[in-house]
Image (cartoon, rainbow, N blue to C red; front, side, top):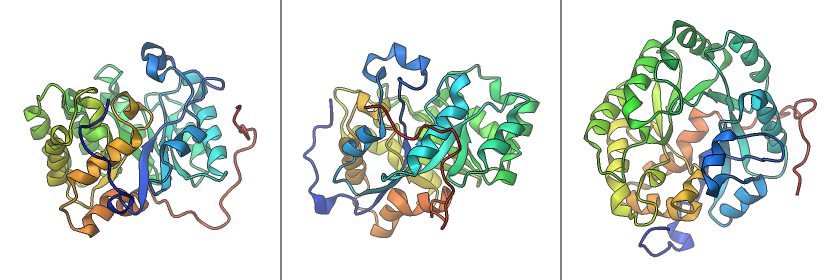
Length: 311
């Protein structure tokens, strides 16, 4: 696996990175049923594994995005991550798992929004029926998010971009963050419809985009920078430099590339851009969009949250 390219020297790498899309899961604590069908991911990935993956790569902060934990463990996963964020690591923000289709959603928001490190919520849509996000209850619940200062990460397949367009259009006051560039079919080379529909999504001012997941959608054995550059450049053209953020999608990205390989490939793709724009992509926009400046006197971990990880 990996690109046919030489690695970058330390001076050529970004001097500062905020990773807006990392995952952790501990199978000794919680259940993630979806992992069972992917042997490479059907093991625990803990914070110490992430810190090793980003070693010497200038990652200064990260945002954990919920990992589609089995529903009974949604709150526990969030509390566990908030506890981890109190320790000596780069984890600073959490995008929590949620179920906007549930009538209990407002009470759930009341519970999680009291913690300043909870920056947003996500309900994975690409594994669900297309009509899940189309119900009146779902939409009404998403419209509650601005009152809690929370964003919504929207994760859809390329063919589902009209769902993202519809939801974001119905909730103009909500800050939406499109995960993985809308998952273009890089390996298949079928980008035309994705290009058109991504442009429509980007025309909505309340949507920003994570430059993540591109490498996982490429051929895992033979991808190159050239394969990734066309979709990345289209994203930048559509959203502009002020509405994009770097994300690793680690450890899912390891199906095709290490954290280092993906980061260096993206660095090569944007190397001709002004330094100011590169900084927006790799860290400046993330601080603004996810409000990552940690306030003084940040709260302690929630009562009852796990205080340490098993070895």
